[in-house]
Amino acid sequence: MPKATETVLEINLTALGTNYWYLKSKLKPNTNFLAVVKAYAYGSDSVEIAKELVKLGADYLAVAYVNEGVALRDAGIKTPIIVLHPQSVNFKTLIDRCLEPNLYSLKIFQEFIEIAKENKQSKYPVHLKFNTGLNRLGFLENDIDFISSKLKETTSIIVKSIFSHLAASEDETEKEFSISQIEAFKNISEKLFRNLDYKPMMHMCNTSGILNYPEAHFDLVRSGIGLYGFSNIPSEQKNFQPIATLKSVISQIHSIEKGETVGYNRAFKSEGILKTATIPIGHADGISRAYGNEKGWVTINGNKASIIGNVCMDMIMVNITNIDCQEGDEVIIFGEVENAEKHAEKINSISYELITAISQRVKRVVCRK
Image 1 (cartoon, one colour):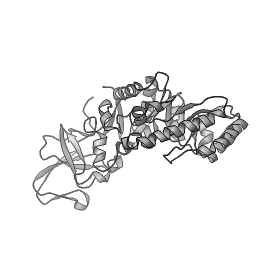
Image 2 (image 1 turned 120 degrees about the vertical axis):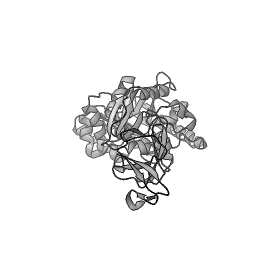
Image 3 (image 1 turned 90 degrees about the vertical axis):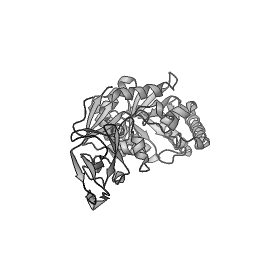
Image 4 (image 1 turned 180 degrees about the vertical axis):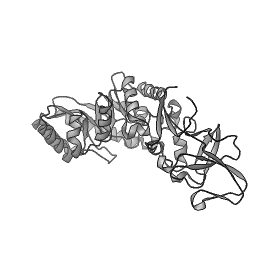
């Protein structure tokens, strides 16, 4: 790739393929793969990523909200798309765009059946989520009888899959809890299936679940963060390649005298003569103010330059006193080596938060390398 001449998020589709095939290698041939592309495909580019994942062979895509699914349909993507957290106000649009809802409560379950009926739907595909311990969304086991009776009464919907979500699949110390979740999900599935004359797909594993709980791969697995190059299991990180590199440039270099200050609120005071570089990226682009005052860094010509002073809305200033560089040189904020996880750790955060925070005003550049 040519050197950056402005702030860009470079998205490497080759790395996406590497991560996809590594995860696929853990599955039996008949286990389907659901790729999670919510939140602009974890802060990258949902349309480009979804198109590539469909080419790679993903059986399903998942988004959080209806408008995210609409954007993919508008881009010509025909693969089945689950909407993980639909709101009933958007059900008509969901049906119009052939999106598949996750139904997770008795209220939303009944509302969707009504709207499907009003819209003269027959066997519209839905997905039922059961809560086995994450305590976020999902039916409980004692809802099964009510669900079953409603399903017998209607021909408007058909259950395509039932699923649950592991709460701590990456954590070895929580293995007992994860296994209890898997067992609970199996019991729920058996109970529900006894009341149906067909067998929906079952799925439970997220990225860490794929790696740690092969016995819970069932018919389908769901991967989000792994596709984008991160593992919550430290020993597995070597098998994943971050797909996004956030780059910028040096706009201006300053010589700072002893006693001078840098940035808002004069947060940095120089104890000697030093050089600073100003870079056109700030908290409006997703670089948290928590990174200011030497908590964060960037890489310039292979050297780490710490952020000094407070992060501004559109700019950061970094210390380049011992770095050979000039105005116009490329700056790496995070990438493959100094990756988002390393940066996130510095402010007690996680890779997810940093990569999904990258503003849509940052230009996306898709490449293969």
